[in-house]
Amino acid sequence: MQRAREDLVRGEARAARDRLRSLVDLRPDDLEVRALLAQAYRQDRQWPEAGRWGYLVESAASPREREMFEKHASRGHRRLTEARLRHLLRTPRLAEIADNSGRALLRGLPARTYAHSRGGLVIWTRCRVAAALAWWRWR
Image (cartoon, one colour):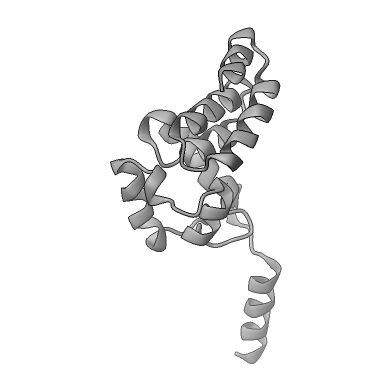
């Protein structure tokens, strides 16, 4: 972890990210590694990834970064489920890496849905379009 910190100080965010991603796999519940990984992505202006690694800790990611991560992670899905979040954050225990605001996000996950829009029009997935067409023909 010290080498990753040194890489960040030198401005070598990519090297730091590589080191930290392997550390996340070894220590999935280490909040310091996740905060450093968010910082490394932030240095490279990859806001959705910064929001990903700081998602459940209020001080590790800004609200805008979290919002960008949610939008990116729910692409192709109607909602961001707890199972999908466990996969994306590479941890089997979400509550252990969450602070109070993160736990509030987890409690609110079942009720949140994401409509992706471009120019005010909702982008439908193929199955939704097929279902809408079938309903229209049946009508």
